[in-house]
Amino acid sequence: MKSIFVRVGIYFLLALSVMTVMIATIFTRFSRQNVRKMYRAELKTLAKSVSDRVSEAVANDEGATPEFNSFLNSIINLGDMRDMDIWILSNSQAQEPLPQVYTNISNVSDLPDDDLDEDLKIIIHAAEGGKTRSYTGYDKVYEQNMMHLAMPIKSAKGMVMGTVVINGAIDNWNSTVSTYQRYLLISLIMALFVTILVAAFLSRQIARPIVQIKSVAGKMAAGDYEQQTYIKRKDELGQLADTIDILSERLVEADELRESVEQNRRDFFSNVSHELRTPITVIKGYAEILNDGYVEDVKKQKKYYERILRECGGMERLVSDLLIMSRMQNPEYEMEEEVFNLIALAQDALRGLRVLTKEERVEFSLIYNDENALVLGDYERIRQVFVILLQNALKYADPETIVRVRINVEEEDLLVEIEDEGIGIPREEWETIFEKFYRAKNHGEKEGSGIGLVVAKTIMERHHGKIWVESDEVKIVTFHLTFPRVKEREERNGQD
Image (cartoon, rainbow, N blue to C red):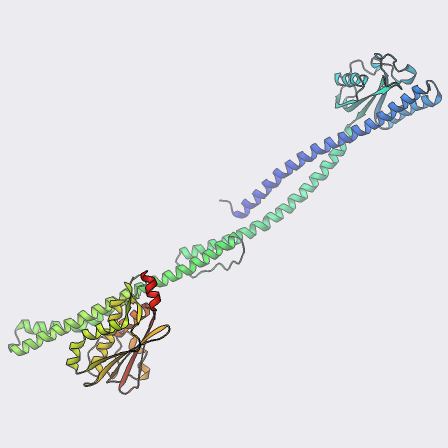
């Protein structure tokens, strides 16, 4: 397979060869025509001067005068000098033919060869008819390429008395064309050399970035996506390089996303296996004790059954939280978004936990500054965030205290605060409590999986919100939530 460098070089040479042939053909044809045109003009001028001089001599009856004889001799000498034959012929068909004393050849039969070319006879006959004619071709008498021109000699009355015929060798003029062609050939050879250099330069300019792009593409095909071409051009190759660079970035992002999804999958199975090991062991132990009949006391059996049910409930919640967290961390997971009032959602979550408030002897308080607390999101998922935080507040709040839920509508955001009074959280743990399976050091004997706050944080991030915690580190703990606000006007436009 030929390289681009070779291909571009061949194409340039082919193009140059075609152009060379075309230019040489056109130039040669033009030169020949131009040379013949110039030579014909020269012969015509000379014929005109001879015709006028003879006409003048006839009008002045210069017949056999030394001056006219000298003129005839000069014509012969001029012809010898310029490689021409100049004939002055009498028109035997005219009423007043040119007297023989004014001619150097009496008639056509006196010419060097009676077997003249027919074309020469034709132009002589045309001149006898009063027309100037010429032709160019190989002359068998002269045995070379000749130009023949015939011009009439007219009397004072305008009658054609005779003819001036000039026979000029054109090969010398053709040699001028050959000289032009040699110069043209030299110029074309120099142009060929320059073209080869230009072709080499341009082909390298084209081939080098393509080879570089090919190398980058090969590495990307092998799985190494973090590649860049580093090609900065403002042409199609530059656009291709930019596209490859963008593709590399997208592939890196896709690979990171794939790795993230795969890591989430691995984490999910690892977390499930890790967190379910203990409750399964407990359930298995109690089930074996009950199955083997070691416990005959009905009250104690009921206690074991209740413990088994509690562990099953905990496993159910844990698996549910892990599934939700795994789904929410997947960018392809689509939430069912709608516009709703956050105050109504908070009231819904509080109603669902009223039973627990009696058991824990804790009360709920909901405070808000604006009834139009509109947000866009997945109702069930955001409700789950409230339930997680409220359950934590009930779990850690002291009896006979109030869990306060405050919703403040601001210009751009909705701010939610869920505050309880119970066990404070040290400042150094404000960030770590949102990590998977982390349990606060001062949580006491409170049960928990350490996954609820991770789920809450994941849901908030998918809703472009934020969650953080603050505490006086002694008793009061406040969880803060922020949601992008949907204004009432925007809601109406969306419904329209």
